[in-house]
Image 1 (cartoon, rainbow, N blue to C red):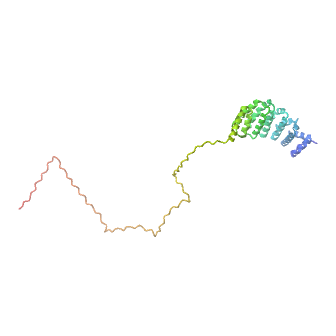
Image 2 (tube, one colour; image 1 turned 30 degrees about the horizontal axis):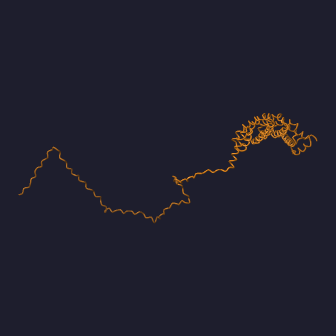
Length: 320
């Protein structure tokens, strides 16, 4: 077959069929990862990931191409390259040491959460392999769990981390992980609380017993019948008549009776008030004038030590 050139217009399924038949097609896909066209790089990385999922040996011996592709600007190429590196690393973890810088850069990718999750998955698989590797990967894993707390990918990160703790991990890593998630294990709710309790259970057996007791109490509280407390009869409240408010409540329009209008008296029936006949002048009697009251004679007392005047004797008339 002549030299194959990658064409993004060709469906990927057709390219995969050709890649299974001709080695030149695979070589063209590997070369396309460093192509100047962004679309060609994305197309080639997706095709190679599909081939790698079918057979992990397809990319064996071409790891340098994928390590270099971790520094491409587009997120799909970086994500597909991380997935291929993860598949290859499951057979040889030394590949992660070679691609450490590129994977760490993808772990703090600011554009794509999927790229961050793929890098986190590679580091947790690396940490679960041996105790020295768990110590080396723990620093980055711990920092990532703090940075991306609350992100959409956070719960999936916790699942990957729990799988790592079940592997060949150093005890110091488990204790530090338990301390980091102790607060969420006690105070969080829902799925985050359950995941945090599971992580904290790896740190200390006492923590496991405490969590199990709490679950037993909750289970008993749900299943056990609730004992009814004796209730004391409550005396009925005295009905207090509402106090009349100062403002008069307007009556309903339907109940309001129109004020009784006074019957209008016809002008003809109205009798004018009877005027008094003027009295005749002759009949009018002049007002009687009151006689002036006589001054009462006040007898003056004779002054003391004053000789009384002698009255001359009255002469009696003589009879002739």
